[in-house]
Length: 279
Image (cartoon, rainbow, N blue to C red; front, side, top):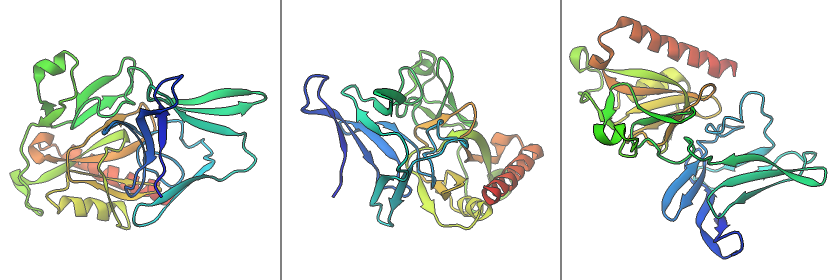
């Protein structure tokens, strides 16, 4: 039986409100809040001990939760530790997810999302747009992409996102001007609409994406493995530190034929593989 967390209609009206929180059936799962039928906030995919889109879940974080999921996407989210201070989670009538922990006789707020004017809100920068965590937040297009509407972008209306500047000519093993390359973007909360692929290492993941012309990006994440994207990259956030590596498919001309870029990509794969092994 599917269970969800539903907000109140208002602070004083406990009838069902317009926000719903749930664990998605994607593999791997993520936390998702919707407003009506539209996504409002998401956590990023579950990576064994953390959600990739929650910066507080860094290397120093001891996670008291466990998320168990079967091949059909059904899962359960449970508490692992019995000696931890009691806590509870609430979804407010305004759509905020808040977590409180008991400290003595007081309930203390320890987590809240989404925060006003932040990258927490779903799809702030639109398809192929990158929301950079800063004050104030800012939207950028990925390398090789330009705003779909320059005028709207200049006015801070970013939701239409970005479009590819150079069309891809992909034939799997093509070379020369038709070759495709991958551009590395660091410190990322992976985009939505990912697909899990059961490859053994980062190199297999990269090669599979390269030879599949519908694959627009990939990531190899410690605790998950290989994720691929076959549609628009949506709701991508870049943190100042932490996060994951995302490899985005581009026409080779976007890299200006710079051999150093290719070296950087190879080094990225090698360092990523080492991280996964050592992690």
